[in-house]
Amino acid sequence: MMTETTLRRGETLFNEGDPGDRLYVLVEGKVKLGHTAPDGRENLIAVLGPSEMLGELTLFDPGPRSTTASAVAPTRLLTLEHSDLMGLLDSRPELAKHMLKALAQRLRRTNTALADLVFSDVPGRVAKALMDLADRFGRPTDEGVHVPHDLTQEELAQLVGASRETVNKSLADFVSRGWIRLEGRAVVLLDVDRVRRRAR
Image (cartoon, rainbow, N blue to C red; front, side, top):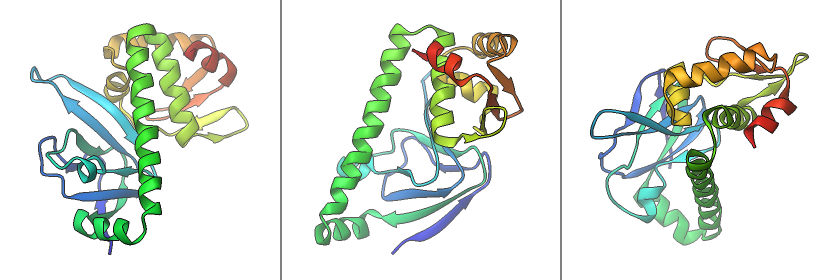
């Protein structure tokens, strides 16, 4: 039932306000979900990777898309029309449980990010974002954990909910302490324990 969609880095999958009529499952690559305020400021809500789904909210609550989805790396997705999915859920209700679990995990992550905005300082939020990206996209190396997050510094700042200057200052501090090394759109966590402690 599914069709394949490919995106280049920077290409948009759907825009905020578009009608939501299909579900996407990431096969490879990364997609950022963002929201633009009326004054033009952007907020990055999530970065999704392989095996994660997007577009599922409109299945349970039909209406326009609440975010804009764009590829931050070359990306391949599988697409399923909502009408096909609804028929599938009727015949295999256990699938709905898996989807609800994924929705609950996304909601939990959003709640944590909201609490961090209120209670954590910027360096703490940067450390937490790095740990989250490492848990999902990192791979162990001899030096530590290599995390190819594919985000620009501006996108990383949007994910943390702070200015690029403030986030850069935090990253520079982590570098000077020997906790991390920056490598373009990737980071190497040299001292995972210190970064994890700073994230608390």
